[in-house]
Length: 308
Image 1 (cartoon, rainbow, N blue to C red):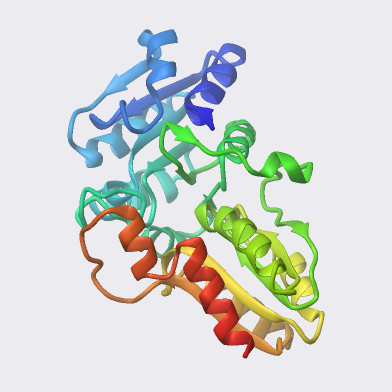
Image 2 (image 1 turned 90 degrees about the vertical axis):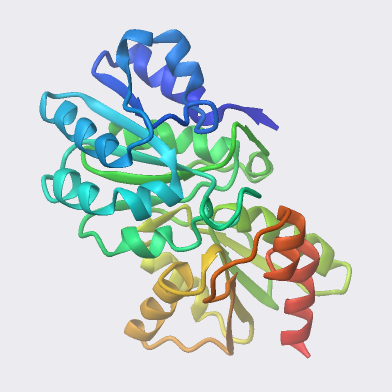
């Protein structure tokens, strides 16, 4: 596990760049911004429980030349502050990074705090870069990358304690690039965020059944690395499974399907592992992940059924 990968990475960025500022909407203890507040209290703004103010204050600071990291829950950034982010930040192409915690089904606080549709919402904003890191290593490296990038970004982050699993693949985050973690002839997982970890673990289980799985990790959902995805899907004879901690509508699955259709590529099979198009139940995360097919055992069960 890696402690506070986003917060600690932001501190390192801020030590080298005095223009880096942070803004929070009363959720600093769960959005991994606490290390920055402790080290740079005079470069932090707390706007209270008002995501609209989070967006507009951040826009004003960016207009003055700051590089602004604005953090809150994904649900509140996507649903409450959308119009303010769209008009005040995105249309003006301001240098604001919207950092969303607990994406998809990542909290047991209930549907009001869940964000199964945030990627779909932000994909509709022109030129909005969207990042969904897999683990602590990915989050840390992505933070460095988006700090150097000039323009609006939406990045999902894991909770303060994040697993580390990509280090075994000699992994290095590149903005806008997908990464083939391992190859396999039977199944191609195309995954992002939490589900890349789940696919790695599922691939190990499926290997015991003699099923060889390739895993293509897609940390940047917009702009999408269409070239790498299409090339991976051109290999005939293997099932393509797109996995994401997001509703089946408007996320990586639809973006991948669109990319394949536009290039005339038809895999032998195409399936999605995602949250269904319905209002989600409340409950513990293990229960919900099993119910909606996001857990490792359920990923394995789905793949086995599709290969029959």
